[in-house]
Length: 262
Image (cartoon, rainbow, N blue to C red; front, side, top):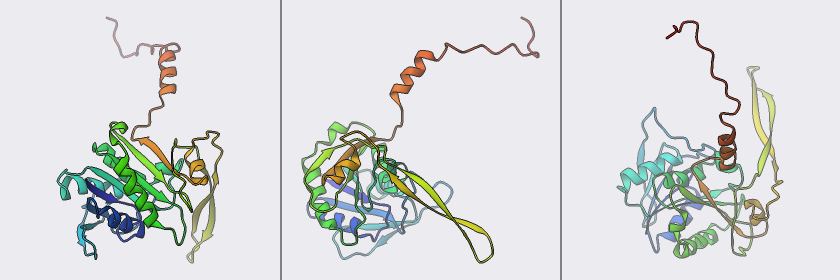
């Protein structure tokens, strides 16, 4: 396979280069990633300024390109320009930090994968726990085996896989759903030397999803969480309810005073 690898941690991140090195032994790998960290950029794209692209010299047998763009930009340029639309799989990661629950809304890592799905290419976002000495090689070997065995045709159109690794020994992988894991935001006010107020944002994690197949529960139990996600955000249940009541309480607007009688 020809695999395009990107991330949001930057082109020199350990997770990205470890994954590329492992996969390059069996696959044709192309790395296109931001030149600096782009965490929490979501699905932003660059539309009002140019995107610079430069080849980075690495001691490996796969090409690496750094861009001034976002992860989504990297995938667009990687597919459309550098690979000339000959990409079989997009992988975004391995990210330094999980992307669980509502993290997927903000994550540049996840958005890199979803951009691949939007372009009609099978895609994976891969994230690891925040640990100083995390074994990215172990995670990369898991991904290598997973993509060898997985039938990507079952994903259908516009769908990617959001994969999150546990700490320690991997017991296996579980098919999971995006959980309601979220944050209670807090802001700490501080004063700069000029007397102006600025804020640091932080928050507490809320994990109250009752489902046994929630993404964060699988990770806590030692399993790799594999969650299918889509670029579309329709709520089908609410849509059906809206269709049932869409005209029940509607009143036609009164005729304008400026309208003449026919």
